[in-house]
Image 1: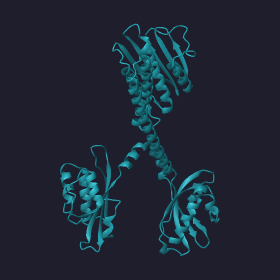
Image 2 (image 1 turned 90 degrees about the vertical axis):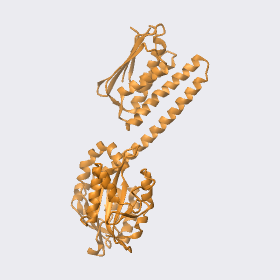
Image 3 (image 1 turned 60 degrees about the vertical axis):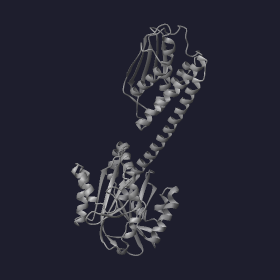
Image 4 (image 1 turned 90 degrees about the horizontal axis):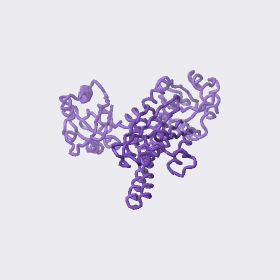
Length: 459
């Protein structure tokens, strides 16, 4: 392989050149930045004159298997047994796990006295690795589809302006009889209208410049299904008639779906992150305002509002940590929320909190109203149930009773509520809020005042 000497100036990747003894003879600015980003600002063992193989030897002695793999690969290049070499390896920083690909290529430099050199560069693939881990289940779902996709070969006559050949699997995949592809307008009539101008311009340029190119676009199958197609010119034009070009296309619908899933996941994560930050600001403002108020009843109202915000904030914190809007484990959340309410009200240690919950995953649309309900009921029990004594208990029980149906019971053994109490006519903001949120969950609320007060919510 021959490479011009000025390729080392390529700004996008970090490059170092080694002689056949493994000594670094030159590097670009990105190599310098790469070393500094990896806590090597002095370029120790990475500067000109340093021996790249000695660095890997030292790591080998310390038992690094990746260093041995890198050493063996570069030695094979030096011996002429390989032309190029690549390997993945971890390079963790104090703050995160990172992955790179080491690329090494032996080449003959043009206009260079030392013709035989090894080009080495490191490609950061950490984001790709994280993406693969986060979407592993989704990738497995579409793996078989992606691996079974077969390329569809086609030949186009420039003078006739039509396809003269398309491989048989086109009928199996698209559903159209092969003879229909001979129609001049058939192909463009089935490209999605929003993509058509872009595709026609691409095709025009491909014919004009006769270069290997690719384009992604949407195409309608015979049954009306819209699929994503990647069309590629990959031709040795010297071996073909001058009036004909050829290429191949294949289905990339699965990868496009994964790509859109990733975009939506990133967007949702950012939205919830910002909501979480805003809730933290609101909580802090309410807390600050409450400290400035002397009237106990008004201060209590501010504290209640702060605790409502706190219940939503805890939900968003758990959501952000879980990395998915449909994967919030309720039992852990109830423990964190209940403990937070107890701490906010400085509850006497003699009042016990007992929690029994099934392990169930809920989405955010269900969790947020449920969180506010739990917050209000516990707050009411703390405020009113034990006014005449300093001990007691609050019991929380959450369970799944059938498919997509749940039961939440919160009970205290306090003084109870009056027999003539009616939640519908109550002036209590907390109880009105509970009733409204139960309706939002399309559930039912039953309140019992025997042996204290119990709230049973079915939804």
